[in-house]
Image (cartoon, rainbow, N blue to C red):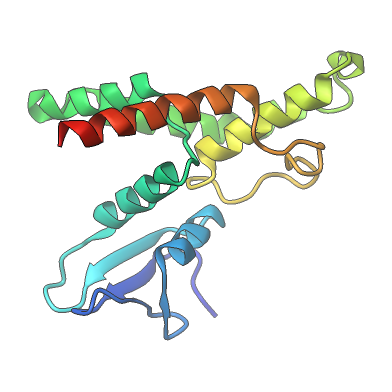
Length: 185
């Protein structure tokens, strides 16, 4: 039985294939993204050198999702991330992001509770759609960090598609940024 408290060890072979040491089978980046969405930490190491490749692969997973139109990060956030690489020592961005996601995880269930049927706003027309959009945003922002949502709070159960108008704008902005970045290369 896998130990959920320890990171799932994935080994990268010279052929670049990724091997799940718990199940003794090969996995894809999408499989790894699934483990993370389920709340599992992963560690990816090069079999030959022992180098930790986790950051590299996590960034690759994000880049692939972004390139498929599953854009989450607004352009201004991406710009700030790029700028943070230009600051000696990385600036305060890494600590800020870590603290922000920790706060999101801690307050996630409270936010869902506040949007429950006991909330007087629940009687307003369009409330369920607004709730679904907020939950989709929170799930997208914390999905890789927090395991699962409380039961009965998924966007599908709320009648939402998980794609709100705000997310469409973010997707469009990121696509524009990706296009500009590819032209700079």
